[in-house]
Image 1 (tube, rainbow, N blue to C red):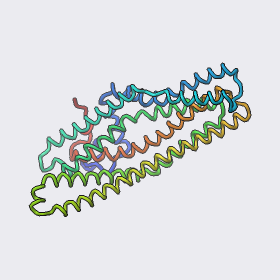
Image 2: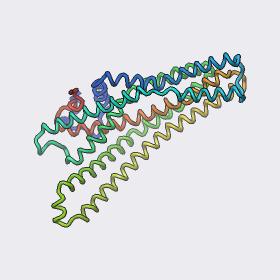
Image 3: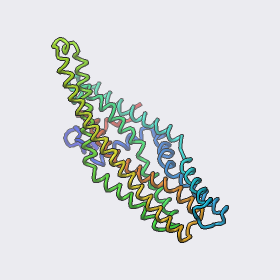
Image 4: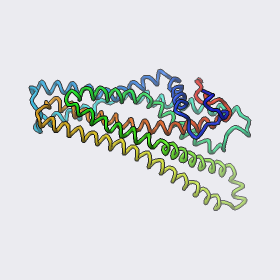
Length: 344
């Protein structure tokens, strides 16, 4: 692993894919008794459980209606209400508890290792920049990495939901498969195409935040000197300039983040529209029973959520690479794996 940093330990602007996943995997193994239940409840079951009630509702309504073809009458409205309600019922409170606990443990480990390494160094070479600048790495970069660790099992749940959902819906109409796969491909292409900008904008934003905290640290540490020199106005003007650069960098990063999220959402909405067109055709030909319609409506939200969240997962991974690299840089010449070494 250390061989991946040929320049003697100093991190590049972002890590390679293999290096990033190695760090994430080590963090996931830190507290497996928290990480695995978090992945089971907040990731796999979060996406998979909403598929089960739809099957039950389908069988129930088919039995009540005698497998009658679906029309926009009383049974259709009841099926729609039942499908929407069932899709919203499958919440997982246990997953939230384990997910938050995992995030806190991972963040504590990262901060402990970084702080321990800094305290072991001579005062003149403890940090690559100022203590104020390091605050943003301890706060924002650690938070980004710890949150992403809890997302690492999500693709399993998303894939399970898509495969099972498509397999069931394809029995009703094979065109449904294409209507779900198309938005997923759109999300993959767009996020991968924006990888460089995602990492660049996140790196610039984090550096701009570090510039602000660095300046504030220097000002608070030299209040007397500033007052004696009568430099308050100059210091405030410089602070405004640095903070304006932070604001602009943050806006660019947020704009790109929400733009990619919008692409994912609208791609899934496009898929939902295609699904509705397929359903309308099936209803017109009388191939939809009331139970089929209930199953169909309950799966619309589940499949759309899985597709959209997969786009968010890819974006967060690219941003996590930047945050990991910035933390590794705090280690100086120490082995990069020091960052994720398991400690009490």
